Image (cartoon, rainbow, N blue to C red; front, side, top):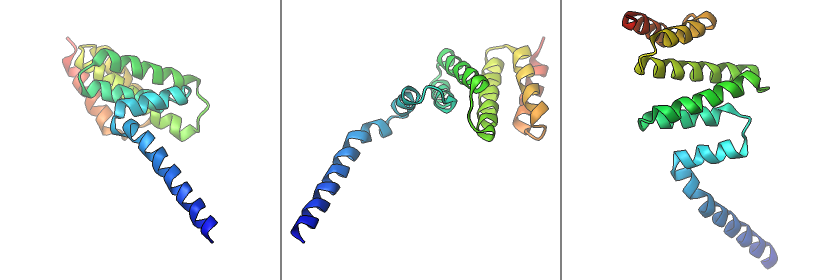
Length: 137
């Protein structure tokens, strides 16, 4: 019986050590998604999330770079259909938002229209399209 308890104690200590080792990654979203992108470079979700984080901190250039990486991965990807659709919508909408912010009104409108072609009930894309068209000189 003592051997079982010792084995269990070793197992718990090993799990605690692994948890302590991984905790710093989970505390920092950029570190988490950067590691995720490195471990699974063919999955676009990490690039989308890195783009969102860059956009939140005001780094539009890095956000656009990450969204374009995600867009390329979606286009050549072999992921499940629904996941690819969702990632495409998020990526395209985020790029359209950046286009609008940066004064690329035609690009923003085209991206919003592309979303609405496939998802006509996506109201946020409709509002973005209207804003882009209203801002176009």
